Length: 124
Length: 301
Image 1 (tube, rainbow over the protein chains, first blue to last red):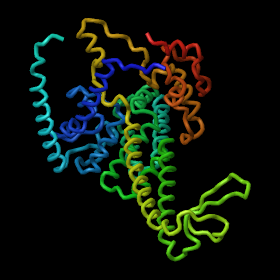
Image 2: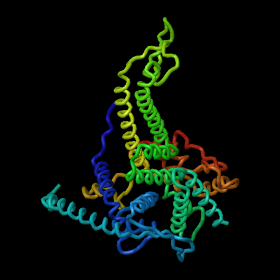
Image 3: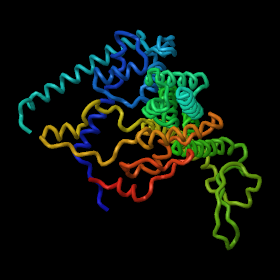
Image 4: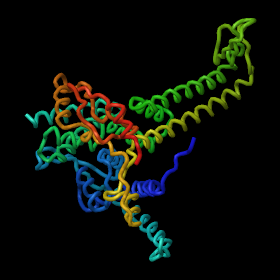
């Protein structure tokens, strides 16, 4: 029986998903930095601002976990749309965490950038 | 009328989600359902027709998937703060309601803890009931090849052969602790595994072109067409068929199980998604696609 070979493009896609998955928590916390938002707004901002389109059902368990960890807080607000919305905002520990995560991310990205510098202008 | 049908469809979906959320505390399950309702109402933006509701809930996933994701994430988050054996066993018990993997993990954990407790109790009781406590081997008869084992305290010690004697004390304590530790580690591993399996494989995907498409574009070649289309409930049947089915399914009680398009079609179509779908709905009962279309759909270009 022949083992099924994975195409390089598929491997690249998987790697890309893993990278984005790693940054998802930081992205959600960063989106909540300036203002409180509700779930669908967070999804839309992730898509438009960060190019991260995640399955819609996954955002609420993630926010619920962040709330359990004390990183975000939530409140139900009666909206103009005619139904209540659950808004999320960063707590003080959440703000501290997102700062630390951002520092760590920048250091990682800068290190990687240095490694990738020789690739600039190189033909594949 | 259309709004009522859409509202009924949403209520049925949320009732099913809530039923599968048994692993969460009641208040938390209610809040999760309320948030999902708010999400769908925001998505449809006032147009509460069956078609828009169907499209919005297809994006969320089937009731079982949504519930499984919520419960596993919650259980895993709780285990990050408290990993006592009792808490791990309780977590697996909550996940056992949601999947076969969870049920298997519960059976293994229960067996592991029972064996560990058996060895420890036997080792502790042995000094006080020297002749009656131990590990016993029972033979069916003089000419029989059937054997059975017994661990613990027996009233008929003469019918069997005790294997370890006094060694059951150190061996029982060591084996009991080792089995208990292994079962505990297995429980933690199982919860993590079940959580990763509950998450959608495509999360989070790039918003625009896929890596394969971009690579093809960079080489100046047209991107290869997908051989399999993503599963979306809204695409799997004609809207007329879907509306007919919803009306039929909701005509009794909204607590009844709705033949959710995704759950029906996933079972039959996971091997290959044909491009042609429709015309197989009859009074709310969806028939699987004919074998010819399955074969055609599973061909790779």
